Image (tube, rainbow, N blue to C red; front, side):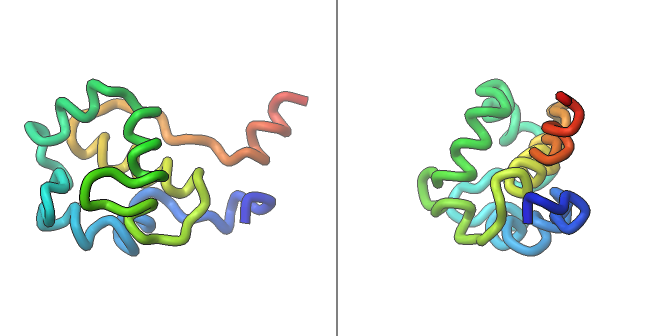
Length: 103
């Protein structure tokens, strides 16, 4: 629920609920959590490219890896995994928080 940012899952929670199935063991070519060598070329493409892959699917991974989360939650999971692989991405903010900060 985007109207209540506190109800949204953290990147680690989304990873544990959905992403770990493939990214935990490296199934079907998925870069494993914490494997800096596997993540490095992906991190170089940037956060937006990684987020697009996660949201729309890429290779053997379906959209959201088959999950049912909102875009901010998926973004948080992307940041969680990429940062474990050596990235220094900032976690995306909830739209409600961003909107109230702009006013």
